[in-house]
Image 1 (cartoon, chains in turn red, brown):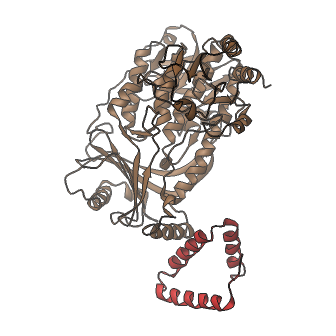
Image 2 (cartoon, chains in turn purple, orange):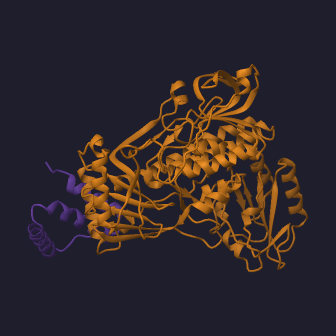
Image 3 (tube, rainbow over the protein chains, first blue to last red):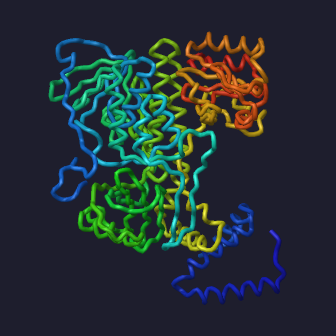
Length: 61
Length: 563
């Protein structure tokens, strides 16, 4: 998986935080699920998508 | 269930006949041994009897009821099933009464997100799907049973005990005309999802139950909409639950709706609650006129089947062997394929034209088909009735994205019935020959059809035995002629179909394919041979005929030993 330059990644981080607030607590789960489906589709690589899911699930506690 | 004040069989559109229990020879001390006893005169049992009758095999068909099914239940007949009905000589009334279709629509919060379009290749004789109430399906099959002369139909006759022997089966039958013992070489158990025979033999269905429950309700109304499958996700008329709407003949509409989480089944099937919900759904689809309630039932999705469909000389067909979710319309269609599969094999065994070993292929082939249904049904059932918060959230995300984007829309595809491919079967030993072809129907799949110049169809020429479709430039050469002759010696019912790229007019012996359309459909060249089984599944195909392999395959289809 190609990594983003740090500056872009920081912008992604900020954009995501703003968007979660914009969705609001009632819709944040739906928003994040939609985002994951859109990103998964654009990624076009099921192995990379599975790996991303594992990374995000790992250490949730 | 029916509205208050109505009897269980008081229908708005269907007149139920009442059949008496016949006085049978067994009651007068005649101890005939029957080749086949079929238990259950539903669509599957009657079809099995008719397939056997096609080969001249007599059967006794018993049913504990005195008439047809109490409701419309299984309403979708798929194209392969129409071919089965054609082969048993019963398709004409089905074509006349049923409503054919190939399109569907899925909606999310009232907006269309998916257009279902089932393929209709130009050479096919039948549409992908036909809607017809189960009572009519049973009536039309029963008319054929009554006309057959080879089927001893006994209504109000209940099997009360069963005893298996090495060379046959003995059963006890109870009927108002009296109780008696009946002996048969084989028993086909078509006695439904709650199969008493299955219980008596101590056999159990295994698999999964799903959470979602549906009410299926029939109503009568004047409603102007074509025969299509409509699926509504999150509709205003049934928030929190999916709705399906199908058109049936006689102005009857099927409205299926999912119960909300935590909603009690007992409350949901109360008439006033049902009327309120159906009314809201109808308002949602713009029907403001009057409607009448006909019949309703409740349903939950299961994927359950027997480990082995054969238990000695008892063979399970239809719902007694497998229960599948309704969304893929595979319950009836899979059962009809069971009936045909065991029908031709058992008939040839009883006639002495095939070895009993052939019956061993029934369970692997048809159970394989059920497991294939499960794989698809599990996907569509999870989409129709998401079982957990994760599945619900993922579905809502996908559906809501579908409003503006193409990519998630395929998830709303109902994955309707495709005929199963017997490529793994021991009757399909040379499936590896598929590698020689680029395209065309694969080994084990149902043969495609082709329309001929005179308006008839390629598969109209099939008989009751093995079929070879041979592609030639002109006429078969000496070697090909010898091969066809050898096939005829293996199977006296063998029918050769020669497709010739030369010549302009079809004859009784040869089909003219001057423009090469049939050759293209089969990815064939001169010398290509397709060997079909009596159920028109492809037993093998060879880009250039290999006589030894073709003869071996034909032998296997008649029960010879594995090569």
